[in-house]
Length: 355
Ligand SMILES: Nc1ncnc2c1ncn2[C@@H]1O[C@H](COP(=O)(O)OP(=O)(O)OP(=O)(O)O)[C@@H](O)[C@H]1O
Image (tube, rainbow, N blue to C red; front, side, top):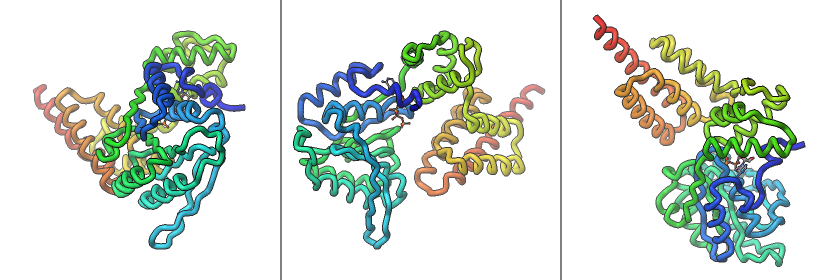
């Protein structure tokens, strides 16, 4: 039995429920024959992978659905052996090079070389190129991105690259200019509601509009989360109630409480407690970007316009530093300390104004 997120994942471009014009453009792109490298970007859960999968199916037919897991062994110039797991069909290969940290350059080069040099196993595969899907392309080191650019040019005859990223700001201009950018924006609230309703219709369930609306609001534009929330609600209680609780993730509640603690007291002792909580989140695998975003969203709720600008500016500064350095905790903590200082000053000024 599969989860609804997998069960109701559209598998062809014509079945995609939103950004329909874009889906049509992608279909034309395939029919036109001259397929470029793509850079598909957009927020988490917006449907990037789903769209790419539909595109691959349009290119190669149902054969792309026969997937296998492969473990590859790659040797670095310093003779270190790196294991990487890829998901592939006869026509494409999907890899997440951020799994191998700073060795990503070698991995990218070797993988593309291997794919480009192996000929199509199935002669009826109607395309003379294979596709390499590189996930989390915005997390690739600059070194790997430059190597990727060169490799892309070298093997363009037998290999096309589809890069998947959350943001293009971390993708080097030389790569951006060699790819066709495809922005997959988050679905709107109404689009999410209509997808939730359609899943319930197919399951033979009746979903009150009020509950669908609350799930859509809480999912924050992330369709995967919305569908997961819906399935959790179904497990918790059916028939659905309009005022039924939509369970948020534990870590989100923990993060919200952490933000509350920062606003309640600004002192070195509190900072120490906050650091422990940040470590706690990171140990449980929550990416530092999520922590940053979650904290910022909660903290700015307590700021006036002037302080909000200051805080957002600081957040941008420290978030940028996270990508330059290697230990996110230092920058997260620096941001919290700087927020505490600004907030304390702001509160003191407000109190002074009162007297
Ligand atoms: N057009 C669509 N219609 C209905 N459901 C969809 C559509 N696109 C995506 N979904 C649902 O949303 C879920 C998430 O989509 P997907 O994995 O493609 O997002 P993503 O943008 O690649 O996310 P991430 O960046 O977090 O990997 C899918 O499992 C699928 O159930």
